Every structure is written in C-alpha cells, then in structure tokens.
Length: 195
Ligand code: S3P
Image (cartoon, rainbow, N blue to C red; front, side, top):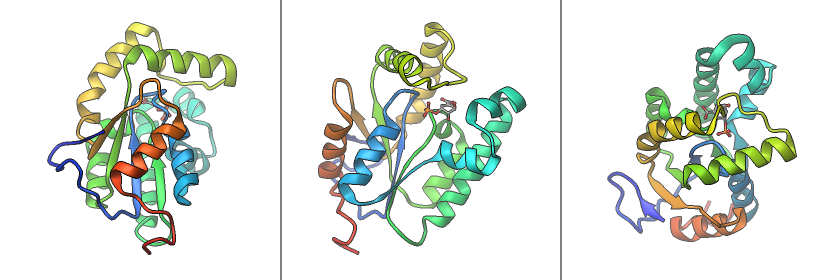
C-alpha cells in the first residue's frame, strides 16, 4: 500500500467514508462489500445509484443515450451521494472505472474531504477478470471492447487513478485479503468504535 500524491505514507485519517477507484475489473465492488462487512459500514456502488435514478441499466444508458449522457448521470449521482454522506452512517463507495477520470468528479470528492483508494492491477489481469465475469455472471461492460482498446483506455486513465490518496496492489489477492489490508493500513475502525 502506498500513499498517493501529497499524502504522507502511514498517515491514518479519521474518516467517515472511503471511495474505491480503479479500472474495470479492479474488484471495487467485491472489495467494497468485504470492507463494508468487516467494518460494519454501509457499502454503495455508484453504478447502482445511477441505475435507480435513471430507471435504466448502465448498458441501456450507453446504448440509448451514449457515453456523454452516462457521464452526466454519473456526476449527478455522485454529487447526491456525497451530499448525503456528510451526515449519517459510515460508508464505503465503489465508483465506476471512468468516474475518477472526470475532473469535476475528482473535485467533488476532494471538496467532500473523502479519501480515495486506487485498487491497482495489471491490464491483462483486469481484462481476464472482466472476460470471466462476462462469461460466468453475464456482466456487460459497454466500454470493454478489444484487448487493445482496453489496454489503451487503461493507459489513458492510469495517471488519473494515481492521484488517489492511497494505492494498493491487488494482484493475486482475494477481496477479503485486500479488505483486511485496507483496514489495517488506513487505520479504519468498525462502526460504533470511534463515533
Ligand atoms: C465504466 C465502468 C463501469 C461502468 C460503466 C463505465 C468505465 O463500471 O461505470 O460501464 O468507464 O470504465 P466498472 O468499473 O465497475 O466496470
């Protein structure tokens, strides 16, 4: 685990929320679930909020209205989520792979003073996970494309992800192992522990 830009490594923020970022297949949702269970924090997947607000699935939004409309819906959902997270229960949030590549989203999260964690793994491993999830769970990702497109998009987005407060190598680790490491290194506490 390493601290990101401007963050002294080993610093343990007292946080009410944590935002997980990373490319498609990085395990943001499965790690988010595992963290939520470990900490007794609420888990929220931003894509699910978008689908509820828009009354359509993410692939439907892409198909019917295009990526720019999806990005608008994504930012609106993020803004709403961050406003709500100022009060109430502690929360771990998984963003979709493109959300942190949008400057205004990064600004919204920074203004909310919520730390971000980049779940990092090589493009080839992420590609394999996405292919498996498509085959076994029917998970459709509108921007999956070919391996070449996937690699190009990964390379374009990586500099954005590296601006996260923290980065964790996830290669070869299970969601539970990653969650345990995050709790330890970030010094997060179970709900009720330090309210
Ligand atoms: C996207 C990733 C998806 C979803 C949408 C766009 C992206 O989420 O938000 O299809 O731009 O990389 P996952 O990262 O959970 O696959």
